Each structure stands twice: as C-alpha cells, then as structure tokens.
Length: 191
Image (cartoon, rainbow, N blue to C red):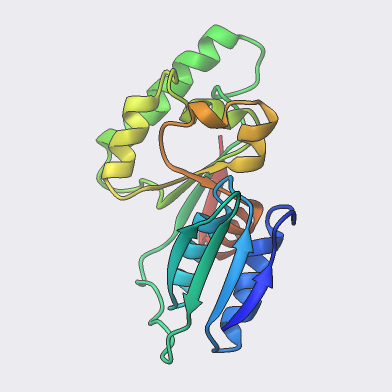
C-alpha cells in the first residue's frame, strides 16, 4: 500500500494530497499530525466515494483510504445555500449589545424555519467563538445540526484564538472544505 507522509504539513495540504491520491484509484495510507486532519481527510475521501479508516498511532494518525471503483452519484438537485459567519455578532454598526441580540435572534429564527435554512454554515475568524461551550447560540446551533445543517468551524481560527479545546458544536474544518463549500454553493451570503 502506498504511504504518503503529510506530517508537519500545514492545513489544507494533507487533504489536497489525499484528494490527489484518491484520483489514482489505488489504495493508500496517509500519515498526518493530530488536530482533526485525519477526520478532514476521511470526510474528503467519503465525498470522493472512498472508504477510509483512522488509526491513532504514537504522536500521529494514519488514514487508510480505499477508493471506490464507481464514482458517487451527484448530490440531490436541491439548491445549495451556504452562509459564512466571520463575526461573533450580527452586523458591524458599532453597537455591540445590539449586534449580539441580532445574532441570537438570527440563529434562533433559523431553527424555526422549514424553508430557506442553509445546508452549510461556515464559522471563521471571530465567528468561531459562536461554536464554543459558552456560546450564546450554542443550543440553536445544536438544533440546526440536528435538522441536518452542516456546521464547519475553522480549525486554524480556533487554534489562533486558543479555543480549540472549547469547541462544542459542528466540525472542526479547514480551508479546503471552506473553499469547496463556497465554490459549490448555488446561493451564498455572509452575516
């Protein structure tokens, strides 16, 4: 089995190396540092129709990937709405109290909608603070996740703000997934 050593490579390089290897159609093993890189590769492999398994080794992870001989059928024809959240409040008019109220109202309102809810919400920059344990919208985000909304939190941002250990909802993600979601969105907006 081919082995790719992607340890010490910054995000999203390990995912990109894995995506290239999947295209070859041959099984492979990719070695990565921790911090969710193995899970990111596993999700990317799954989207490409490959099976994968993660093995935690001494100080690093190994992901074994077995590509499928048949490509996956395209996703459903429903319109794909993606929302990006770069702030931990709603708006930037300078009234922090109002912006926090609007933020809580927005996410709670999304839980009440049947139509028009996004398929994916991407949290980055200060927006990742909304995905941590003491977030004022944590319960609403959990409810959205239960409704099938994909919540992606930037792993680089969580690490930058030193709050990775406090992450409580959604998936710790990377720039590859962010670019893929934004690039394949049929509709997109940012709050």
